[in-house]
Length: 304
Image (spheres, helix red, strand yellow):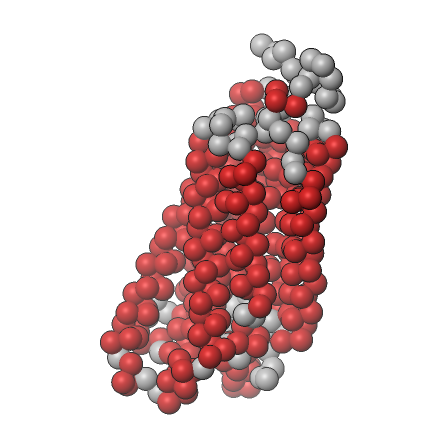
């Protein structure tokens, strides 16, 4: 049965802002700020990806930043007209899927950390981390993207609920993947710390490196903030469209916007090309020996 606001296309005396899905006009100044931050980080990620030849890492980070920029551009459209369906579709699709690219960058680094400190301390062969977690992230990305597309273009409440549930399932799957990743990473750190006195000289020197420690702090911070954001999105979508959480802009700004800004700033400032050069050296050595595995999405690098 059609709702009373189904024919609303712009704000009028009847089609009030409070009756929209979000119930507010997105804050213009905050939205522009997020676009600026993600735009700058996108440029820096692109430049660093070329400079350090971290093709896969640079690609997923650049795509993630682009998704954030386009998503917040959709919210600028909604600031002008909260009933604009195009703006709603753009922001819901892009802001839902963009953090999956940042998560992929986090997943990629564990393989190289394991190779640097000792595969013998890992529960899994190093290359499996890339295969398993990037594949899981891709599945999550597909589910969220498809759900966002269905929800954004739905003409009826039942179809919109299907899209919402698919998005929710994708984010839940992403959180499960993040938790499994954290468990394996923590286990590797624990096993490595117990054998600290037996680590090779190169690994010991890396552990004492200030740049690597900053990289590790940034990596953990990015992981935590991405997980916080995904948990928030689960709570937001679980309540259905137009629920109190979804209509709280301050919570959105902090738990969607600010936390992802922190993650991206950490992943940009403490870029592995500069802070973790072993990530490049491993590829260079493998390529020189003709041993590079074709399953690795990170292409061959030169040493720095």
